[in-house]
Amino acid sequence: MNSRYDVVILGAGHNGLVAASYLGRAGLSVLLLEKNDYIGGATTSQKVFPDYEARLSRYSYLVSLFPEKIIRDLGLKLELRQRATGSFTPYIKSGQHDGLLISNVDEGQSRRSIIDLTGSETEFEQMKKFYALSRVFAEHAWDTMLELLVAKEEMKRRFDVDDVSREAWRSLAEEPLGRALERYLQDDLVRGLVLTDAKVGIFTHPHDPSLVQNRCFLYHLIGNKTGEWKVPVGGMGAVARELERTARSAGAELLTNVNLVALDLKGKKKTVEFQIDGKQQTVETRFLLANFGRNVLAKYSGKTYEPGTVDEGSVFKINMLLRRLPKLKAKKYSMAEAWCGTFHSDEGYEQMNASYEQAAKGRLPDKTPCEVYCHTLTDESILSPELRERGFHTITLFGLDAPYSLFAKNNEIVRKQAEKKFLESMNQWLEEPLEDCLAVARDGSPCIESKSPVDIENSLGMYHGNIFQDAPTWPFATKKEQVGTWGVETEWENVFLCGSSALRGGAVSGIPGHNAARKVLEIIKKTPNCPSRTGTKRPTSNVELSKSR
Ligand SMILES: Cc1cc2nc3c(=O)[nH]c(=O)nc-3n(C[C@H](O)[C@H](O)[C@H](O)COP(=O)(O)OP(=O)(O)OC[C@H]3O[C@@H](n4cnc5c(N)ncnc54)[C@H](O)[C@@H]3O)c2cc1C
Image (cartoon, rainbow, N blue to C red; front, side, top):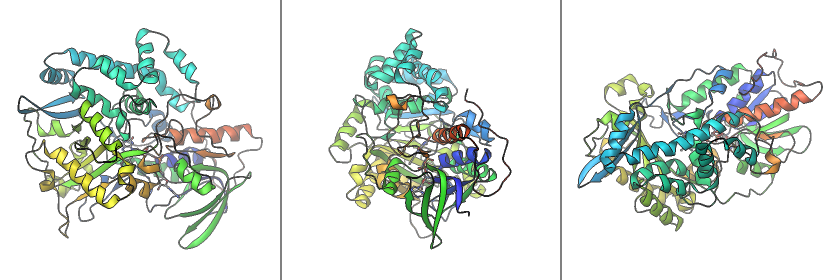
């Protein structure tokens, strides 16, 4: 380790690694400091149950928003695999168990499934029209995510080209999502299915005047212009490993188990004080990039963090290793078809309005909405050959309407209660309870772990367990001073956000990491006699940041 670097990055989440890769390739000396004992932050696979060779995506698990441009620029070897089923939503009709299946590969099957549910194909056509709005939005907005922020008015002008674009702008950027959703769709289950993308990770409802639900919805629908969520082969850890490889081969130095002590952000040279292996260290840097959220940066800069009203996280994550997949009560679809997509439970539109209201009043909802994923049906490589042969699977449950405030006072007890409720929600659709299918560790404990927003904040620093570090933002500038910026700027010169807290951050996207790197390189280009490489001597790479489209 040197005493001076061009760039120090605080946190080694995937965005910090993206920034490090770009900046290292541009010839800058880069040091990453991570508090945890592993690299990747929320983008990680771990052997959660030590007795079994199964590497679970402990936090994030699906990828949609990682731009192909970053993959190309950095030469990342990633395989993102399509799931045959988009979603499966079990329901009971006339006393019979059935299910709504939206296929990723067979539109006819989705159509038939909606007709079975609603009795006509109108809802299917309406759903297509509704999703056409987000496709149009993606066409206009996606490529700008790796460019300087444009003003809201300018973005609106770009939509002023035809009726569908104007409708997309109005429905998704101006009025609460609930309005369009209720205008287009009539069936409660279909409405609920669509609404879930507006609620993942945040505490909101369809008519929230803050429009945070719209922003969350857009994040789920515009990725690479298709909005399709794919399984990273090898789990999320494969994404982090690949980025770690590119960062290291670009010359970046990575330190884990770092205890950050103090930051001095004021002068031209920033200083970072930290402890590692029991020793106190100080490094000087020209650029400081914060991969952790604004809340953590505030703590170290002596500022009071002032969260927005919609920054609270709302998530309940359960990771499970199963000896076998439980059979479903609904028999229309094969087990593999039903389980390999996003399995929705208790996510009817009115059900979620009720669960939101109950959680807002400070109690766990009667019916806890959740979605469940069995990634091993799409990518079995996360299990050892022996576990595959024995029929093991991993299951991950993502619970909604589980805000931080419910857990803040008594995390241990409420976590247990919530786990029970979410499992009950799933069990209503299964022939045998999930609990009976869990693998068992040598000490007799079942292979299940639950993480509340409090746990997520404790492990990763994400503000109140917000999976995007704080509320997702619009893909355009909403304030005058943001126009023409990268959305990574802070009040301190040469101190930038390179993680999810940046504008257009959030999710596994690498976008803020890319944008922070662009900002640094832009400054260097404008400064005479730069880059002044202060760190280890390495040959300057010829790789420049290629221009955004
Ligand atoms: C349960 C869960 C499920 C999710 N599911 C998905 C999904 O399926 N798909 C998707 O796209 N997104 C998902 N997300 C969101 C996504 O994972 C995050 O938005 C993204 O990974 C954040 O990446 P990042 O690099 O910006 O920050 P982080 O991953 O938060 O990295 C920040 C790093 O800073 C470190 N740090 C914090 N404090 C300090 C300190 N004091 N000193 C040094 N280091 C520190 C942290 O340990 C961490 O390594 C999920 C998130 C969670 C929590």
